[in-house]
Length: 570
Image 1: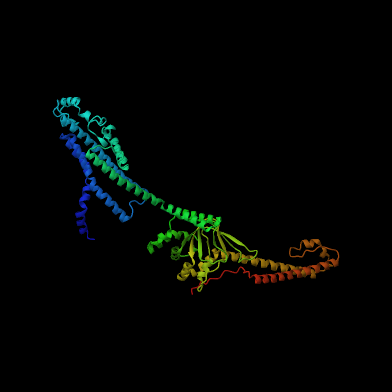
Image 2: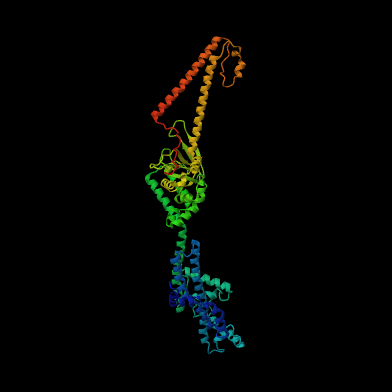
């Protein structure tokens, strides 16, 4: 924690290595040291100064690899994406190949100069003698003597890498630099060829190298083989790890799918059930990509978890008209308890008569909600639920009752028509809201709940329908009564009694009878009308008795009004 102690410890341990690795030695040697050495007439012997550049890579290696491990230990990864991590490891491998290719080229020039030096010493006593400075391209002060030596010497012929079989000097792995005219190429061509040479031999562990018995060449080949083996294995391992991290979820899903198939075959499930299981797994994979949101949220702090859930669910919950009447505090609490729910086409969410254990708020998809009023003959009501609708409203009535214990029975059968994505609110969570938030007991929410509840809508429609039928029945009875009284009060001797036009203008409430010319026929019609009214009334009474008997024997429930919840605080 003490900055001074941290600085002292750093100066005693890692400062020297970091400082040496950060020095621009390659730029200084190449731009200043080597040109200055050539101006002094030192010739090609000074080309070995380029090897100083390689010495600096030793402390750089001591910095790169520990720093790489420290980054992984601290953050857990080098790059955020798998492709970036693979590119990073490939860049390190190419850097090592660049160093290997550059070292090979510098060693090739040094090997050429070593051959010239050896042959020049052998012609030291010849005429004209071989002077080592003749080998320097900038040695123009010798003039005619150098040109005469060049035309008569055998140094260049004996150090020709193309015909090294005819000479005693073997170039080995450095012959390619001269047989392929690398030394006389442009800088870009020279650099790319050296980089390719390093990549080829580092990835093949030096198997293509034909070495001579020269000790330095053999040691260089051994180093290429060992370093290439280590770096290539690390490159392949890291890239495989990064690529595997991209497909780990796909592989887990594939293994789970295979295990599910084997389990279904072992249990001998019907083909239709197997197909439904396959469709559900496919739909769940497309919706979640194998990510378990519950596990991710469970590991987060409570406050952060609440904020994330509010961000994910608040706007979706507000789309539900019933929830739009609530304040933000209650909506936030509801968002914390909502659970994601996925269903495929043809799934029964709940059946009529089963216990309701959750309310479902639809985000995407369509459901069919139907009821037979407890199995009543001739009764069927069906509606389609879409986005922003909800089902399981019996649970809210149950939650608002002060002493409710047993879960309510569903009055409707809910089945999915398409793939459905929704949020579910469990019974215990809804009960918790009813106890903790008195806002649920307000009359405004009560009216909103009744307005958007399909159970209350069905009851209201059936109530209006029953009232209309009662009205029609009462009206029919009044018409029959008027017809009967009309027959008894009508005078058969009246001239208008047989007037057909009067019956046409009488209207629907006037009794319509066939015209006749005999009083006896009218008396018979009156008797028949009276009997018809009496039989009709008796038939209605018998039908009531039969319906009551059948309902008592079969115990068929009627479509009662939904339970009135106690919206007042206990």
